[in-house]
Length: 465
Image 1 (cartoon, rainbow, N blue to C red):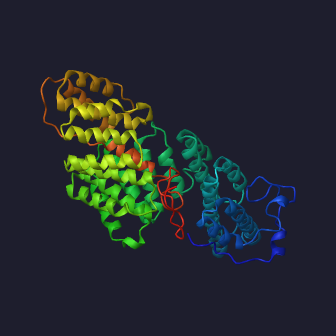
Image 2 (cartoon, rainbow, N blue to C red):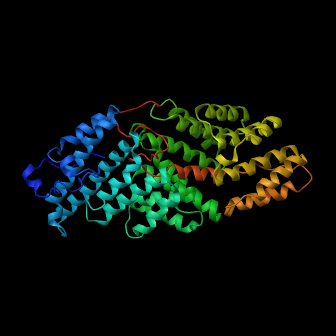
Image 3 (tube, rainbow, N blue to C red):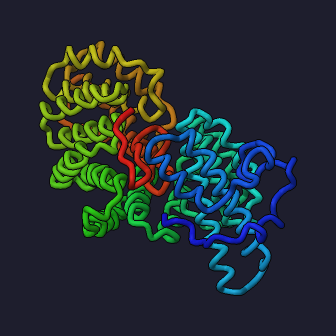
């Protein structure tokens, strides 16, 4: 986002709007105004703050960013709020600029709170900023940031409560708020309503990353929950559109997202050429220092999934093992066991599955584990393996649509006392869950706070910490 479009104002014009010395500072620090930004606020805090963030001096950046935020709040009161309400196009445009600019500042402030270990103080900042602009679009931005904090540091359930209690989801067409609503919605949230949220994002956002991402989300939901495959052609068209963007103009996140969409589409459409394209895309991303170990691990895992589709078990196994070297993950171990089954190394696959800590798996991961046990049992036709697989599949919960059909089909196959020639069931449930985990669209890069991509500022490209 470009720098805020405001020119310096004489201090005397802003002092009229300052809070009393003993009142809380406008920046949300929790300090009194006289002890925080009084006499220090100004436009220069923006450049100073960015420069300090680029040098990773986050603690020093915080007061500079706060002073700039205070200056902007006062400027809004002096030059925009005084003309509201109005139908004047110039004032309405300035109001929109204020909302977007203050949103960018607050995002940056949130990042510094996270990097200084003070992220749990951030909700108090948002509480102070909630009244900064009297407009539902600003409230939607604040609600998004609050839900983002809760989603990443508390729980999805807490984030969903904040979203629903705001009553903004149906009133404001805000892409960020809609995106985290999709991410935080509870398991019993109707699939069609989730699809509607994706469609609303596609309607209000012209961001290429949004268009590719939510076309994919919509199509996967249609298939996984409703059994509808009619959206695959739309997904192929979205991929073709995104591919036309010059590589140099794609975001760091967009490059990775493109590979994930290739992987998903390859499975849905049965396209081996797209699986190969996904592998090539991920390999082009891996050398980028802006990706953390978690991101590299995820890309290597997806490469392994593509090789499984291509039935190149050796390369699949190598990718999963490389992924585990980057970041330990129970889900990757499940896929590693699948590659071992493909190589007919059944003892190794059995040992791998038995050593997986089920407590580290989310519900969707438990579905994968059940499918993996079934895969081993159907390959070996051993009674003990079948019994273990049946227990795992019968204990599964929250399987709906396509995945419930796969679960029931696997149970039926396991009860037949003869080998069956069958295709390995696609693990779209897990892939869809991980795809949503790429949300929300944090800092304009689709970054979540789980350290997927560390870099959010173009002047800074940090290595892994």
